Length: 248
Image (tube, rainbow, N blue to C red; front, side, top):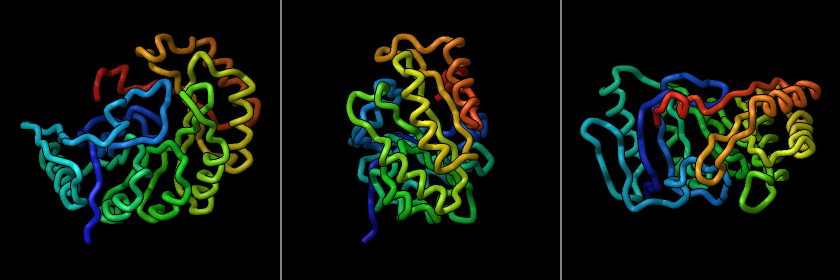
């Protein structure tokens, strides 16, 4: 039987984070996330919605759950509307919380489109299952001070081990709030670098919103970048560029 899943939205925009920042992409946002980040900027992805939307002209709407064939059809509609085959970014929510659906969906683009997976990096077994259909993994490393609850270092480490074992193109992102301390970041960096010493690491200042009313200062970001450099990390500081541009 075909496997269905929950999506929030499909839209075309520019990638605003990580290694491929600025690249035109089609985003498929899946619904549902088991984590609760204090800085979450996509609360609409925390739960599986009753209805999804595709931001075409005119917009298309439908009910969840949806079949993988239906999502592939929406992506093709964006190809027609935008006139070019863009990289596909599968984001959330947390995509790997729906491994059966991803295993049904991602093979449709294998060898035809570059597929990016944007993930919290806490489901190593799910990544192992779909790794053959993923071209790039943008992995968040959740620092405990940025979360409502929970520590995830062990699950992150196991996830990164899968990335390395599979030889996947990847980057690791740390979202930095004013609560992040030197020792906390240094400890996480050590775990990353012990497994993947050359993986690009991004320090992303949290975009101010209601939950995090003020982001870290430029001086603070420079301090943390120097801390990462001193440990041999290939580090870059990059804010959420799509937020600066005022786009989705």
